[in-house]
Length: 174
Image (tube, rainbow, N blue to C red; front, side, top):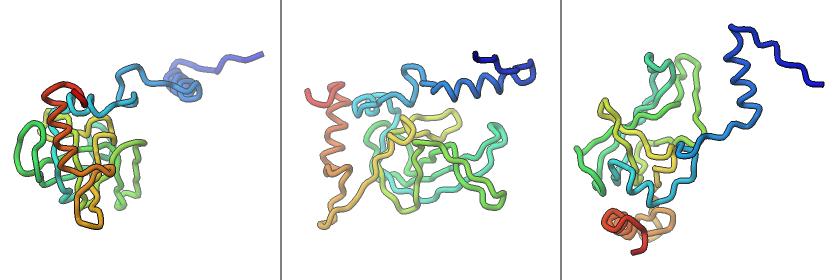
């Protein structure tokens, strides 16, 4: 026979969290862990940009008491939305070697200076951005042997054309 956990008042929240994790919590519908398709990312992002990462620096955020990483990008092309020639993405997680702290967030995109990407972004109140759908809103750009920029095997220019089509029609294939 199962015995109830000895959850006294001060420990009630911890007991709930442990049971929640052990029970295999699933996020509610509409949360960022749900399947996000390309059309949804395109239509729901406030900004879509082709950009190159200039810097990526982790810091302690006192208000949330967590590590966050600020990544600054130079915009090569605004595909949706507008803005300046640079943008800043603030993401949870990062490393603070001077404090001997590392915080990882499963599925969160990481950025390396010099890396090019197509970024599907959501604007934040303080002027920075978050990547739509956690790491799914970052599509890395690779160059093939001929120097053509590609995203997941597709030419970058055809991907940008596809994004514009979705923005005009609301779907991928009209």
